[in-house]
Structures are given as structure tokens and as C-alpha cells.
Amino acid sequence: MNNLLNFSLTPDFLEMMVRFVICLAFNWFIIDRLYYKKSKRRDFYFTFLLTSVAIFFLVFFMIFGLDKLGGKTSMGIGIGLFGIFSIMRYRTDAMPVREMTYLFVIISLSVVNAIASSATTAEILITDFIVVVAIWICEKNLRIQHTKLIQYDRIELIKPERREDLIADLESRLGLDIINVEVGAVDMLRDMAMVKVHYKESMSKHPNSVDAKLKLSKDDLVNV
Image (cartoon, rainbow, N blue to C red; front, side, top):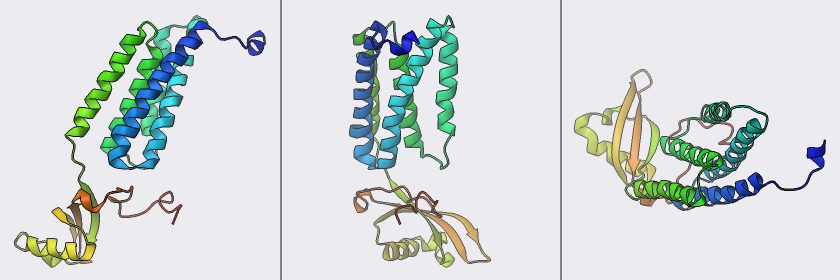
């Protein structure tokens, strides 16, 4: 009860707030300036930023709370990491590889900043900066190629010798500047083939979350 009525701030909490501001600033830069600038996915922007905040406080209070209760820090770290990385499996839709990588980086950076009690502020800044530079280098050399999955009805055009006719037909029907076409499964009973179309980025300045889907979920239809 005395702890509930005590409104004073401990030195550990003040130190945590400094590290939280550093962590949030770097994570925001990664999400806003490196990820969102190219992807334009507001749904993942929301997820990444709030996950960063929640993970940081979860790990900090779990570890330092166990320390005060006489528990072992390694136990706290183990329990925290088990719960944190279980989040990556707790989802309804499959997450693209690039978004999964960013989620892993955001979670890892939040955990590192939360548990680095023995590290100096300079060491934390250098560590975060190295992560940002690594992401920037990868993003600089990454060319996102937009794709669409299509149930194609003219299976006579999927033959290798008629590839140019296939691309021309898809361009006229989709209005896209197609780079490459991949032919997948073929259903002879319904005269249908699965086709993956790769098209130029300039034709889609704002990528969406349903490009590579054949069926829309309830979440996709919320604003329809």
C-alpha cells in the first residue's frame, strides 16, 4: 500500500526514461524514414511503433521487478523473450518477409535498450546507430518489385512460345507495365492457371496490402 501512495521517482525509473526516449527516437526513425517511406503501409507503421513501446516497458519492469523480488535476471530475460517472440506467431494473416524482418529488428532494439542497464548512454547510442546504418544500407540497395496473383483464364497463352502474347494480353487487361510473368498451377477442368505478375514500381506509387491475395479477409473489407 505504501508503494501505491508513493509518487516519488526512483533513479532506475529516471534512467529508464532516458533510454526509452533514445529507443523510441531510433525506432521511429527506422519505421518512418526507412520502412514507411518506401512501403506506405500504415497498418504496419501502427503495429511497429506501438510494439516498440509495449516491449520496452514490458521487458524493463519484468527484469527489474524480478531483481527486487530476489529473482534471477536471467530468468526474467528468458521469460520475457519467450513471451515477446511468441508475438511473432500470434497473428491471423501471413506477414511478408520484409515486414517480419522489421518487426524482429524493432523488438530486438527495444529489448536491448531495456536490458542494457550496465551500458552507458554512449554505448546505447552507438549500438542503435549501427542498426540504423545497417538497415539504411540494405534499403538503399533494395528494389521493391510489386506483384499480383491472378487467376488467368486464357491458358492457351501460357505456353513458352506464346510468352509475348501472354504479357501483351495481361498488360492490356490490367493496365500495368509488366516486367515478368510466372506461371504456376494449371486447372485443366476449369481452364484456369495461376499467374504471378511482376510490374514496375512507377505504376503503383502507393502499394497496398492486397496485391498478392486472391481472397479478401474481413479486415480487408472493413472500409469497403
